[in-house]
Image (tube, rainbow, N blue to C red; front, side):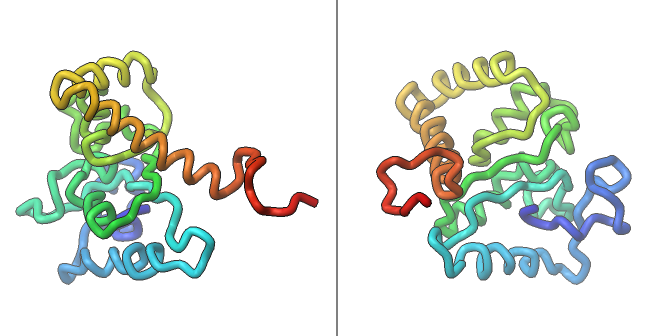
Length: 182
């Protein structure tokens, strides 16, 4: 989970309201970036970096919102942007049920929540809502806000990242790959 999983207040579970806040005693938020920026983005592997991350349910909490708005990880463009701004181009999938739970966005409807995730560069959301009832109107709103070409480019960016992950872990046949099949 990016970023903050394991820092849930009081050691509670961030999947319920009793543990909805991630806290960073000693102002150690940046310490939670190390496994991702210095580890996951510098792997000695075929891809050279982690393929995917999942923002957590928790809300990165500070009184002055220095870690972004008081919204769950999937909605937090500021924190997800840390990875994107560092050059990471992997897939972001949300935790399951985040649209329904709201996590700091309870005053928004599912379409508004979904748009926050799109704007935060989330590629795939984890289950729950009816995709066409939520996604289609959000896409139309994106077309209205940013133009058809830019809205389509945003969706294609996510599709590319999802496909790249699936191809690299060989979830699809790759008839043109150079690997030998036994």
